[in-house]
Length: 322
Image (tube, rainbow, N blue to C red):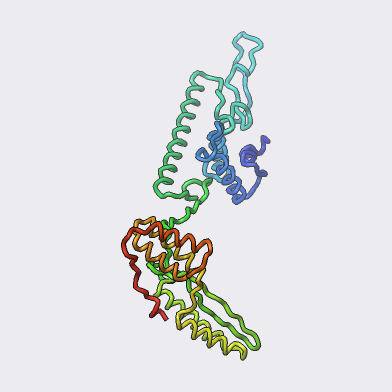
Protein backbone atom coordinates (compact mmCIF):
# COMPACT_ATOMS: atom_id res chain seq x y z
CA UNK A 1 0.00 0.00 0.00
CA UNK A 2 2.88 2.38 0.79
CA UNK A 3 4.27 1.83 -2.69
CA UNK A 4 1.00 2.67 -4.35
CA UNK A 5 -0.12 5.99 -2.88
CA UNK A 6 -3.12 6.11 -5.21
CA UNK A 7 -4.59 2.84 -3.99
CA UNK A 8 -6.98 4.53 -1.57
CA UNK A 9 -8.43 6.66 -4.35
CA UNK A 10 -9.07 3.60 -6.49
CA UNK A 11 -10.85 1.99 -3.53
CA UNK A 12 -13.02 5.10 -3.10
CA UNK A 13 -14.32 4.60 -6.63
CA UNK A 14 -14.65 0.81 -6.12
CA UNK A 15 -12.26 -0.03 -8.95
CA UNK A 16 -9.04 -1.99 -9.13
CA UNK A 17 -5.69 -0.14 -9.07
CA UNK A 18 -4.38 0.58 -12.54
CA UNK A 19 -7.84 0.93 -14.09
CA UNK A 20 -8.11 2.78 -17.38
CA UNK A 21 -9.32 6.37 -17.69
CA UNK A 22 -12.60 5.16 -19.14
CA UNK A 23 -13.24 2.84 -16.19
CA UNK A 24 -12.40 5.66 -13.75
CA UNK A 25 -14.80 8.00 -15.49
CA UNK A 26 -17.65 5.47 -15.56
CA UNK A 27 -17.16 4.58 -11.89
CA UNK A 28 -17.14 8.23 -10.88
CA UNK A 29 -20.28 9.05 -12.84
CA UNK A 30 -22.11 6.15 -11.24
CA UNK A 31 -21.15 7.18 -7.69
CA UNK A 32 -21.64 10.91 -8.33
CA UNK A 33 -25.13 10.26 -9.62
CA UNK A 34 -25.88 8.22 -6.48
CA UNK A 35 -24.46 10.66 -3.90
CA UNK A 36 -25.16 14.05 -5.50
CA UNK A 37 -26.79 16.35 -2.89
CA UNK A 38 -29.65 17.12 -5.27
CA UNK A 39 -30.60 13.45 -5.39
CA UNK A 40 -29.40 11.96 -2.09
CA UNK A 41 -30.78 13.43 1.13
CA UNK A 42 -28.56 11.44 3.51
CA UNK A 43 -26.54 13.45 6.00
CA UNK A 44 -23.21 12.12 4.76
CA UNK A 45 -24.08 12.24 1.07
CA UNK A 46 -22.41 15.62 0.49
CA UNK A 47 -19.16 14.53 2.19
CA UNK A 48 -19.18 11.28 0.21
CA UNK A 49 -19.72 13.27 -2.98
CA UNK A 50 -16.70 15.48 -2.17
CA UNK A 51 -14.55 12.41 -1.46
CA UNK A 52 -15.29 10.68 -4.75
CA UNK A 53 -14.85 13.96 -6.64
CA UNK A 54 -11.40 14.44 -5.10
CA UNK A 55 -10.45 10.83 -5.88
CA UNK A 56 -11.59 11.21 -9.48
CA UNK A 57 -9.70 14.47 -10.04
CA UNK A 58 -6.51 12.97 -8.56
CA UNK A 59 -6.71 9.79 -10.64
CA UNK A 60 -7.27 11.61 -13.94
CA UNK A 61 -4.53 14.14 -13.18
CA UNK A 62 -6.59 17.29 -12.64
CA UNK A 63 -5.38 17.55 -9.05
CA UNK A 64 -2.11 16.51 -7.45
CA UNK A 65 -2.26 13.99 -4.63
CA UNK A 66 -1.33 15.24 -1.15
CA UNK A 67 2.39 15.38 -0.53
CA UNK A 68 3.83 12.54 1.55
CA UNK A 69 6.71 13.68 3.77
CA UNK A 70 9.74 11.42 3.59
CA UNK A 71 12.02 10.43 6.40
CA UNK A 72 11.42 9.27 9.90
CA UNK A 73 11.02 11.06 13.20
CA UNK A 74 14.20 12.25 14.83
CA UNK A 75 14.74 13.03 18.44
CA UNK A 76 15.87 16.39 19.68
CA UNK A 77 19.45 16.98 20.80
CA UNK A 78 20.29 15.77 24.27
CA UNK A 79 19.04 18.44 26.64
CA UNK A 80 19.44 16.37 29.79
CA UNK A 81 16.05 14.77 29.59
CA UNK A 82 16.10 11.04 29.01
CA UNK A 83 13.29 9.03 27.65
CA UNK A 84 12.21 11.72 25.21
CA UNK A 85 11.03 10.13 22.01
CA UNK A 86 9.91 11.32 18.64
CA UNK A 87 6.35 11.29 19.91
CA UNK A 88 6.86 14.79 21.26
CA UNK A 89 7.85 16.01 17.80
CA UNK A 90 5.51 16.85 14.90
CA UNK A 91 3.96 13.55 13.79
CA UNK A 92 4.97 12.24 10.43
CA UNK A 93 1.96 12.02 8.05
CA UNK A 94 1.92 9.17 5.59
CA UNK A 95 -0.54 8.75 2.78
CA UNK A 96 -2.54 6.26 4.86
CA UNK A 97 -2.10 7.56 8.38
CA UNK A 98 -4.92 9.17 10.40
CA UNK A 99 -3.21 12.53 9.93
CA UNK A 100 -2.88 12.25 6.15
CA UNK A 101 -4.42 14.96 4.02
CA UNK A 102 -7.21 13.83 1.80
CA UNK A 103 -10.92 13.34 1.51
CA UNK A 104 -10.96 10.30 3.83
CA UNK A 105 -9.66 12.44 6.73
CA UNK A 106 -11.51 15.63 5.89
CA UNK A 107 -13.49 15.55 9.13
CA UNK A 108 -10.55 14.67 11.43
CA UNK A 109 -8.98 17.24 13.72
CA UNK A 110 -5.20 17.17 13.42
CA UNK A 111 -3.14 17.32 16.54
CA UNK A 112 0.22 19.07 16.50
CA UNK A 113 1.54 22.60 16.51
CA UNK A 114 -0.65 25.45 17.60
CA UNK A 115 -2.91 26.73 14.86
CA UNK A 116 -2.97 23.48 12.89
CA UNK A 117 -6.61 22.83 13.71
CA UNK A 118 -7.60 26.36 12.79
CA UNK A 119 -5.86 26.09 9.43
CA UNK A 120 -7.59 22.82 8.69
CA UNK A 121 -10.95 24.26 9.77
CA UNK A 122 -10.38 27.24 7.49
CA UNK A 123 -9.50 24.97 4.55
CA UNK A 124 -12.58 22.86 5.18
CA UNK A 125 -14.78 25.96 5.31
CA UNK A 126 -13.35 27.15 1.99
CA UNK A 127 -14.06 23.73 0.44
CA UNK A 128 -17.64 23.78 1.73
CA UNK A 129 -18.19 27.27 0.34
CA UNK A 130 -16.78 26.21 -3.03
CA UNK A 131 -19.06 23.16 -3.14
CA UNK A 132 -22.04 25.30 -2.12
CA UNK A 133 -21.30 27.81 -4.88
CA UNK A 134 -20.97 25.01 -7.43
CA UNK A 135 -24.29 23.46 -6.36
CA UNK A 136 -26.00 26.84 -6.46
CA UNK A 137 -24.70 27.51 -9.97
CA UNK A 138 -25.87 24.07 -11.02
CA UNK A 139 -29.39 24.69 -9.68
CA UNK A 140 -29.58 28.09 -11.35
CA UNK A 141 -28.51 26.62 -14.68
CA UNK A 142 -31.04 23.80 -14.26
CA UNK A 143 -33.84 26.26 -13.50
CA UNK A 144 -32.82 28.45 -16.44
CA UNK A 145 -32.69 25.77 -19.09
CA UNK A 146 -35.38 23.52 -17.63
CA UNK A 147 -33.26 20.40 -18.18
CA UNK A 148 -30.30 18.59 -16.69
CA UNK A 149 -27.23 18.69 -18.91
CA UNK A 150 -24.39 16.26 -18.55
CA UNK A 151 -21.74 18.91 -19.14
CA UNK A 152 -22.75 20.85 -16.02
CA UNK A 153 -21.57 18.10 -13.70
CA UNK A 154 -20.07 14.72 -14.61
CA UNK A 155 -22.52 12.91 -12.35
CA UNK A 156 -25.68 14.46 -13.72
CA UNK A 157 -27.79 12.64 -16.25
CA UNK A 158 -29.56 14.20 -19.17
CA UNK A 159 -33.30 14.28 -18.70
CA UNK A 160 -35.43 14.83 -21.75
CA UNK A 161 -38.71 16.33 -20.73
CA UNK A 162 -41.78 15.37 -22.63
CA UNK A 163 -42.84 18.12 -24.98
CA UNK A 164 -46.07 19.81 -24.04
CA UNK A 165 -49.00 19.09 -26.27
CA UNK A 166 -50.15 22.27 -28.03
CA UNK A 167 -53.58 20.66 -28.27
CA UNK A 168 -54.00 20.22 -24.53
CA UNK A 169 -57.80 20.76 -24.62
CA UNK A 170 -58.35 17.63 -26.68
CA UNK A 171 -59.07 19.00 -30.16
CA UNK A 172 -58.61 16.59 -33.05
CA UNK A 173 -55.87 17.87 -35.36
CA UNK A 174 -55.47 16.79 -38.98
CA UNK A 175 -52.79 14.12 -39.32
CA UNK A 176 -51.60 15.54 -42.65
CA UNK A 177 -51.79 19.32 -42.19
CA UNK A 178 -51.90 19.71 -38.40
CA UNK A 179 -54.85 22.13 -38.47
CA UNK A 180 -57.89 21.88 -36.19
CA UNK A 181 -61.07 21.73 -38.26
CA UNK A 182 -64.69 21.99 -37.13
CA UNK A 183 -65.53 18.88 -39.14
CA UNK A 184 -62.68 16.35 -39.09
CA UNK A 185 -63.28 12.86 -40.39
CA UNK A 186 -61.73 9.48 -39.87
CA UNK A 187 -60.92 8.36 -43.40
CA UNK A 188 -59.65 5.02 -44.71
CA UNK A 189 -57.55 4.69 -47.87
CA UNK A 190 -56.38 1.51 -49.58
CA UNK A 191 -52.83 0.71 -50.68
CA UNK A 192 -52.26 -2.36 -52.86
CA UNK A 193 -48.86 -3.97 -53.37
CA UNK A 194 -48.55 -6.83 -55.83
CA UNK A 195 -45.78 -9.12 -57.02
CA UNK A 196 -46.12 -12.03 -59.46
CA UNK A 197 -48.90 -14.28 -58.14
CA UNK A 198 -49.58 -12.49 -54.84
CA UNK A 199 -50.74 -9.12 -53.61
CA UNK A 200 -51.25 -7.37 -50.30
CA UNK A 201 -53.85 -4.75 -49.38
CA UNK A 202 -53.08 -2.23 -46.65
CA UNK A 203 -55.63 0.09 -45.02
CA UNK A 204 -54.42 3.58 -44.12
CA UNK A 205 -56.62 5.21 -41.45
CA UNK A 206 -56.20 8.77 -40.16
CA UNK A 207 -58.13 11.70 -38.67
CA UNK A 208 -58.09 14.32 -41.41
CA UNK A 209 -59.42 17.67 -42.51
CA UNK A 210 -60.63 18.02 -46.14
CA UNK A 211 -57.29 19.35 -47.41
CA UNK A 212 -55.37 16.66 -45.55
CA UNK A 213 -57.64 13.99 -47.00
CA UNK A 214 -56.77 15.11 -50.53
CA UNK A 215 -53.07 14.86 -49.79
CA UNK A 216 -53.35 11.40 -48.25
CA UNK A 217 -55.55 10.19 -51.11
CA UNK A 218 -52.89 11.23 -53.61
CA UNK A 219 -50.18 9.58 -51.52
CA UNK A 220 -52.05 6.25 -51.21
CA UNK A 221 -52.95 6.26 -54.90
CA UNK A 222 -49.37 7.05 -55.93
CA UNK A 223 -47.98 4.19 -53.84
CA UNK A 224 -50.55 1.83 -55.32
CA UNK A 225 -49.70 3.04 -58.84
CA UNK A 226 -46.02 2.26 -58.28
CA UNK A 227 -46.37 -1.03 -56.40
CA UNK A 228 -49.75 -2.49 -57.32
CA UNK A 229 -49.28 -3.56 -60.95
CA UNK A 230 -46.36 -6.00 -60.57
CA UNK A 231 -48.59 -9.05 -60.27
CA UNK A 232 -51.36 -10.29 -62.50
CA UNK A 233 -53.70 -10.89 -59.52
CA UNK A 234 -53.24 -7.36 -58.15
CA UNK A 235 -54.26 -5.38 -61.26
CA UNK A 236 -58.00 -5.26 -60.51
CA UNK A 237 -57.62 -4.54 -56.75
CA UNK A 238 -55.10 -1.82 -57.56
CA UNK A 239 -57.50 -0.06 -59.91
CA UNK A 240 -60.31 -0.33 -57.34
CA UNK A 241 -58.07 1.10 -54.64
CA UNK A 242 -56.98 4.03 -56.81
CA UNK A 243 -60.57 4.88 -57.81
CA UNK A 244 -61.78 4.59 -54.22
CA UNK A 245 -58.96 6.79 -52.93
CA UNK A 246 -59.53 9.48 -55.52
CA UNK A 247 -63.25 9.55 -54.71
CA UNK A 248 -62.42 10.47 -51.09
CA UNK A 249 -61.91 7.14 -49.34
CA UNK A 250 -64.33 5.53 -46.92
CA UNK A 251 -65.66 6.84 -43.56
CA UNK A 252 -66.11 4.22 -40.79
CA UNK A 253 -69.37 5.18 -38.98
CA UNK A 254 -68.37 4.02 -35.48
CA UNK A 255 -64.90 5.54 -35.63
CA UNK A 256 -66.20 8.88 -36.93
CA UNK A 257 -68.95 9.09 -34.32
CA UNK A 258 -66.48 8.42 -31.50
CA UNK A 259 -63.96 10.94 -32.83
CA UNK A 260 -66.57 13.67 -33.37
CA UNK A 261 -67.97 13.12 -29.88
CA UNK A 262 -64.51 13.74 -28.38
CA UNK A 263 -64.08 16.78 -30.65
CA UNK A 264 -67.42 18.22 -29.51
CA UNK A 265 -66.40 17.78 -25.85
CA UNK A 266 -63.24 19.78 -26.57
CA UNK A 267 -65.30 22.61 -28.07
CA UNK A 268 -67.60 22.54 -25.04
CA UNK A 269 -64.64 22.77 -22.63
CA UNK A 270 -63.36 25.73 -24.66
CA UNK A 271 -66.71 27.50 -24.19
CA UNK A 272 -67.89 27.28 -27.81
CA UNK A 273 -71.21 25.52 -27.22
CA UNK A 274 -72.84 26.32 -30.63
CA UNK A 275 -69.95 24.69 -32.47
CA UNK A 276 -70.02 21.75 -30.04
CA UNK A 277 -73.70 21.22 -30.93
CA UNK A 278 -72.89 21.36 -34.65
CA UNK A 279 -70.17 18.71 -34.27
CA UNK A 280 -72.52 16.50 -32.23
CA UNK A 281 -75.05 16.72 -35.06
CA UNK A 282 -72.37 15.41 -37.43
CA UNK A 283 -71.67 12.55 -35.02
CA UNK A 284 -75.39 11.79 -34.86
CA UNK A 285 -75.49 11.55 -38.66
CA UNK A 286 -72.92 8.76 -38.50
CA UNK A 287 -74.54 6.93 -35.59
CA UNK A 288 -78.05 7.07 -37.08
CA UNK A 289 -80.72 5.23 -35.10
CA UNK A 290 -78.22 3.07 -33.31
CA UNK A 291 -78.92 2.47 -29.60
CA UNK A 292 -75.37 1.83 -28.47
CA UNK A 293 -73.78 3.42 -25.43
CA UNK A 294 -71.95 5.92 -27.62
CA UNK A 295 -75.19 6.91 -29.38
CA UNK A 296 -76.92 7.54 -26.06
CA UNK A 297 -73.99 9.65 -24.86
CA UNK A 298 -74.18 11.77 -28.03
CA UNK A 299 -77.93 12.30 -27.63
CA UNK A 300 -77.51 13.15 -23.94
CA UNK A 301 -74.86 15.74 -24.78
CA UNK A 302 -77.17 17.31 -27.38
CA UNK A 303 -79.95 17.57 -24.82
CA UNK A 304 -77.61 19.12 -22.29
CA UNK A 305 -76.42 21.77 -24.76
CA UNK A 306 -79.95 22.62 -25.89
CA UNK A 307 -80.61 26.31 -25.16
CA UNK A 308 -83.75 26.96 -27.21
CA UNK A 309 -81.96 28.44 -30.21
CA UNK A 310 -82.08 26.65 -33.58
CA UNK A 311 -79.24 24.22 -34.19
CA UNK A 312 -76.68 25.63 -36.58
CA UNK A 313 -74.87 23.26 -38.90
CA UNK A 314 -71.50 24.02 -40.45
CA UNK A 315 -71.07 23.97 -44.19
CA UNK A 316 -70.14 20.48 -45.37
CA UNK A 317 -66.73 20.75 -47.03
CA UNK A 318 -66.44 17.01 -47.65
CA UNK A 319 -68.76 17.07 -50.67
CA UNK A 320 -65.91 18.36 -52.79
CA UNK A 321 -63.11 16.44 -51.10
CA UNK A 322 -63.00 13.68 -53.68
